[in-house]
Amino acid sequence: MSGFESIIDQQKPIRLLTAFLQKGTTPHAILFTGIEGVGKRMTALTFAMACNCMNAKQGTQHQDTASNPCLRCRSCRKIKSGNHPDIIFIKPSGPFIRINQIRSLCQTLGMKPYEARQRVVIISEAQAMNPEAGNALLKVLEEPPQRTLLILTALQTSDLLPTVVSRCQLIRFNPISRKNIAGFLVEKKGLKPGDAMILATLANGSLSKAILMNRADWIKRRNWLIDEIEALPSRPIGLRLAFAERLAKNKDVLADSLEVIKLWLRDLVIYHYDPEKIINRDLVARIQSASQQMRVKSILSKFDAILSAQKNMGANSNLRLTLEVLTFRLAGG
Image (tube, rainbow, N blue to C red; front, side, top):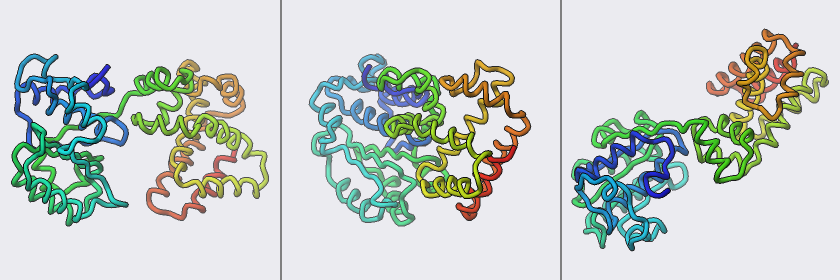
């Protein structure tokens, strides 16, 4: 597959964009919103190619000629390789998109495009614009240059200046289904279906996150976490505190680690009622054994302990203390 067909689970956004191409009514600014890893940047690139494809016929009702870029012409190849002079990328410099980046963009937009039918500016993570950069971009949106399209990507509209949002055509991207993420991991990454479904569940709708978790061998980390949780009740206080300390030191993966533990506890409960719906299917024998040794009420209490810890972390409570309390609640019967 190529072009828009390669973008997973975003039928509505693609339908809107192809309608712009077919009718020749592309707005001067578009805002893509949605979680990370759902195809916003890939869609922006594909749309930039479609706008400038030398083999596409703009403003035609024939979807096969207006919707997809050919990927073979000189323009498509340049855009795909990142070497087209009129396709401009802006992303955060450190934690922010700064005003000097937008000022430099304004200078570039003051000149005519070099060769593109439509110059395209792709501003990734637009929520990272500081207020000065946002206000500078607003001037561009109020007086858009001819033959120029701005595509902004952001997590949600509330992260941007309302005046910026109001001057863009909003297109929302959906989280990708577990089934399609798992299918991608099986087909493209060679994972076993069971492992693929586990990563797809942990990725929570983000394909890029699922790919990163596969590279980081999260199945191995899952196994370690389950081993630790099962061993906690029989361990002395010192080893329980050591587990809490290890969780606290790995802040980058803490949120996902807690989700792994929640999935394990979920499976223990689900096994009591509908064993076919467990997520960790490769551990079915282990789940069966563990679920038979624990009361549902006790499992739900541990699940609530994680929810409470997540809430406290969101409120910036003392991380180490929060995890120590969690560890002792997970060790309880």
